[in-house]
Image (cartoon, rainbow, N blue to C red; front, side, top):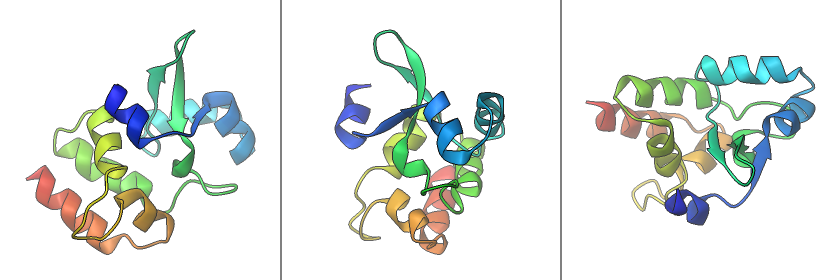
Length: 117
């Protein structure tokens, strides 16, 4: 988990995500179960948290769910997906999460598909 701490500095608890999206916490849990969001357990006490950059001001980052599905189908675990999304890729250039936040899914999806094969 230490690698994720270096890559991701801003986390939201599930209640924080629910407040930002203006939904119930149960809906946030469903979004995680449906691979629209990723959450990991961390902290003391241990709670499920979501990287803040997976949300815009009041919505999910565009195209995140489809990218998660591609990576999940390729056998990636949650921590591996988070590491990939938040790691600089010189060939993009930048981090996949930043491209998704700008609505630029094409290259990110191509790379995710290549990894999933």
